[in-house]
Length: 206
Image (cartoon, rainbow, N blue to C red):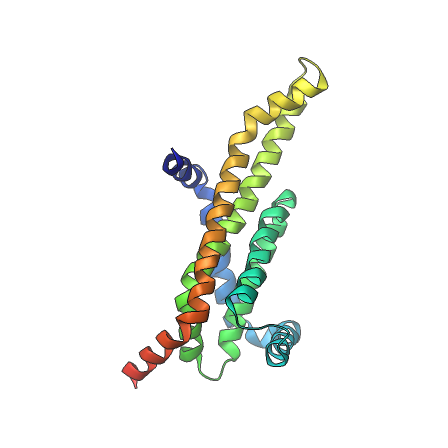
């Protein structure tokens, strides 16, 4: 039953998921390519993040990393109410990562510090953005059904409209839950596995 619901959430929302994948990939590439033009915009963000890590405001613990990242996941979900804002959050994160790789002194090492947990983190962000888009789809279907329904009391109209569109809300929440689980896995990898994996690969290549 649960597996079927998850399968439907993916199969019936392929467009939202594919759109999120495309946005992330394009923003990653553009963030890397357009690095000279993004310095004035993103360098302050990098400097602020570096300072917070160095001063201990942000600690590289599972709790800090997870709660910071899960906030972004829920932002993309909630911003789905306004449709495009989920996309903007995802695109900004893609731009930032691409830019960060571009300005690093050792691009290979930086990529190795991103990929192990990034596999889960990027997948989480993709599904979080998709969940926001599906949430927008639910709101659109709900309002459309409410507008077209003129039978019964206002309460009955709202209930009928919700029942007619509730499947999309359920699927949005399913995608959100999976995104949250993936982000938790990403946090574990980032804290405990990313650096050892990166060092091991570098030792093999050197």
